Length: 45
Image (cartoon, rainbow, N blue to C red):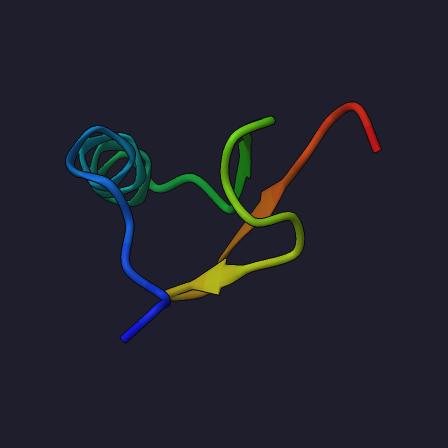
């Protein structure tokens, strides 16, 4: 399973999901990835 998050990133993703976010901006996570309906985007691409 190469799709795992680091512990720190997992905490960020879980907090965003629990907060009802549809979009998470991160320069460290995979751009374009969808997690439970929430999109992760790199704001610098």
